[in-house]
Image (cartoon, rainbow, N blue to C red; front, side):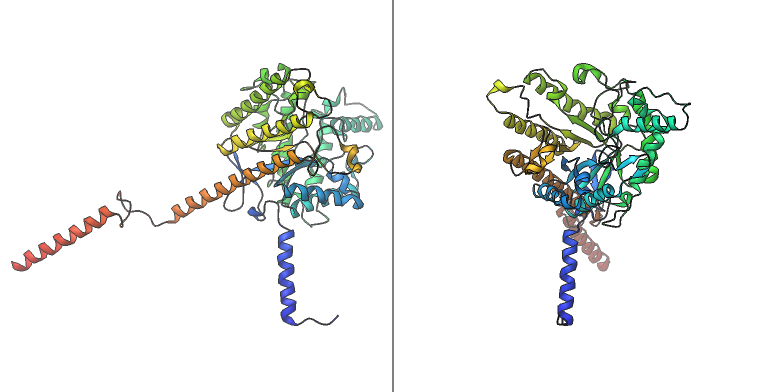
Length: 475
């Protein structure tokens, strides 16, 4: 190859630098390398405290898909499609406990191929300007979760000769010292992981929006919420000792418990689910609140009108209670409407159209709160999938495939644009406020020397001064 002239080399270097800056942009590039923070009921980022509103999706499968280098193009496609529709948040799993494709096959034993898959997910999210909300384990049996942790403990205790522990259910996850030590080790391992793609430790990566302690914690052993409450009060401060930079949330669905300001009668069927909405979100180290929305599953067998009424009450009560008793931002981190079994088949509208209408209703509620200064400032639908037969195994009746579900894609895009415009409006208002603060200070009550009142005063004072001077001169 012929050597390049110096000017050509410089031009090439400048081009590459610009290209790297464009395609390597930090998630939320408006904030540079800054972490997302909380300011009252707002998420903010950057030195100017730019307000961040969130339009997002769930894709629990990203890590597992990326663990196979031949499948990583699907992860890239998911982020590319989401970014093209204006989305800026992805919620996904940072766990896979036991099973056939584990991240953690036994306590403290990790599979590097899965971890490198998660590395790739974090790097691609950053490259596409999308924040990640990473969940650390599951309440349910899918991908292991709390039952797998308790099973590991039972096996280890048995191998050591037994004694000292009495495991009765998966809910022992919340109170067993041994099980909690396994979970804490997982937290530390994930947070201190150094990304093999970017070279940045997870705990230092601004592409990560925050950590979710558990997906949908519930507890049958202590249904009023005290056991989960105690667990969150232990785990959130522990996580913060390792990573004080990122935001933390328990991962609640929004079910009310037995504490102060709780409203159990608003829960589906008016029963307890083992969590406190208010008290648990007040735990030390918790930065923001979450709810989920699945009216047709939670209230199976009820009428469409009953589910619509529940939706309105559920959303309004959590916006109200978050504002009045928590003073933190609120996200709907899961919402969806089931497509495969149509409870309202006689309504003259097909299941997909009803799903799209539900999607619009949720997003309208989010925008109404956000635009009015309320605490509900974003959400993430369940779930994003790609087109193609090889994704069929991941379909669960809630999937949205953007190239195929054109109406849903349009609703999401329009909402994302409106949320981005809110952020721009807030930024413009903050810029005006900064300019006002930097202007020269006004004098007295006149509002400045250039007002007509002050000018008239100076003219008259000058005339009076000249008259007095003439009089004194005559004397």
